[in-house]
Image 1 (cartoon, rainbow, N blue to C red):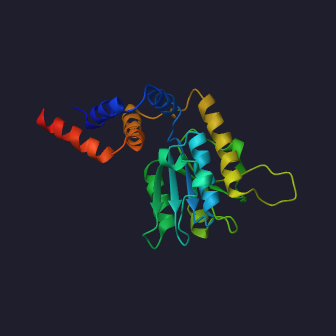
Image 2 (tube, rainbow, N blue to C red):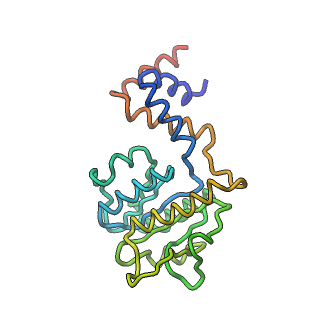
Image 3 (cartoon, rainbow, N blue to C red):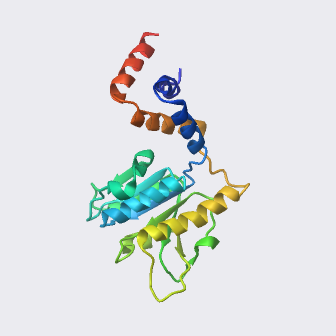
Length: 227
């Protein structure tokens, strides 16, 4: 018996029909075709706002590189969004940025640096037939040289005023809107999660709303071993 599917069925007995319906609706809009990479953001409210945007646009995974600054959730900004996401942190290596990039490339992602560059394109021109990892840098300095050196593509956002850049959380929201809208309207892009991925994520969501989830899980796993 599939353990994840079994546990999901058991945990569903402990949540309301309304919650089940909400989960069922949201999981169909979740994607890993697009992911977000944050490199060394130092303002908690900005990082939290980014994760909130990821949740709103159906992005399941966020990758956080902590070279110098530690990411901390600002609950007033985050509004609980981060608990519905899979967040991956890179903070224990001498080369955290390179580790994150290599990890994502191994999974088939094209690394897209969001910064003006000689070979850049506008965000609405970015090819999205293959999975893309949109990489965003610090609020002041942008992406590091290592990130730029190992990027596969470069994009910029449209700006028509005197200010040179958007706030980082606004940049992420604009980029995600452009990319996910095109992705969802395309008949040629397989952006949806697999059934296995859906069950794994649904189980993780359910555990977050069931009291004493670890104890409940242990009980059901014991029953499964007895069968």
